[in-house]
Image 1 (cartoon, helix red, strand yellow):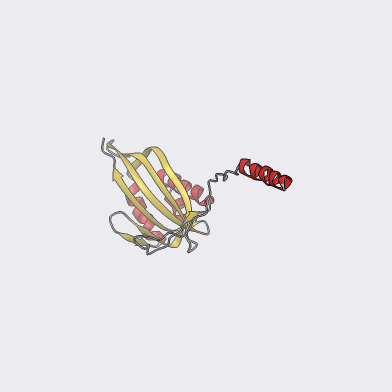
Image 2: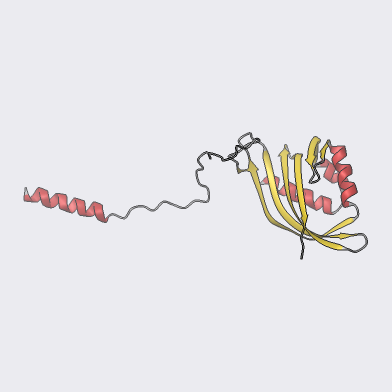
Length: 172
């Protein structure tokens, strides 16, 4: 009986002293579905999307800054939609390219920086790239103004099929 009690004490002591395994930290955590306060009407439960689309979005900006509207048109799907910050919705590649030509021809982008850029994919499979960026815009008359934007591009098969843009003037 004494041996059995001694054995139980030793085993109990070993179990009590055993170091508990710490959970490993991961940059990717399992995300439980979220109970929203306001239900999204488009989609929710986004995950990180295809990083190749980040490079497409960056290339699109580079092409626009160079005012190569033919190359920009090559990156836009024929049936693309653009929701501009003034509430205008443009449909089709031709209308979007015309809008860009009018808006960007007299402007030079300087000191362009991306604050954050991330690819996301919704539960509906739509691949988006969200960008928060800024630049100094110089007009033909030499006036300069710092701007910040939030752009969202949806890609399918390497083409922009939908994008949304919002900008603001940065006050010094």
